[in-house]
Image 1 (tube, rainbow, N blue to C red):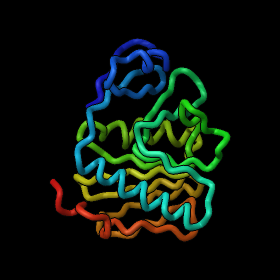
Image 2 (spheres, helix red, strand yellow):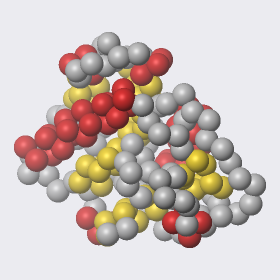
Image 3 (spheres, rainbow, N blue to C red):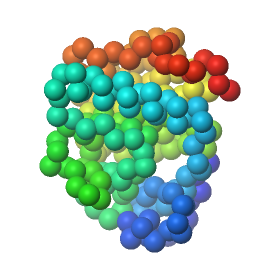
Image 4 (cartoon, rainbow, N blue to C red):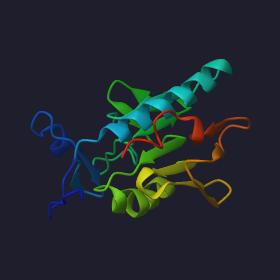
Length: 185
């Protein structure tokens, strides 16, 4: 579970963390992150590749960026997150430091220590910041929850399902065809 310190922090505190230590900052609170496991990283790579290949095949302009990648949700110094996958369609939001404002689509892969953050804290933060679509992929629960904030739909799927992306008319991701997702524990 991410650990929280009890005073107001800023992005400067994130940049001053010791080398190799990762954390996110939400409303001035620091949440330290444990290193992801193999299954988590495998899913990040596979999903990023599928989405990026789709965008390139359509000559799209959106960028697919996996973590670690800085997202400054509210353009303030109290919020800094590193979503597992960010899809940003407004290139004006991108600079060398990261994404300034809400990505269009965020996917978080749940780890045992990130469950509360992904399902509650980040859900609220992403919605209020203007993220259009948020997926929570939870390998341990065999569940993908899709929040389409534009239509206010909440849909649940399993890793045996094909899941349609809301921000694209013809992109569906068949989780059953993602190599290794059913075999790694």
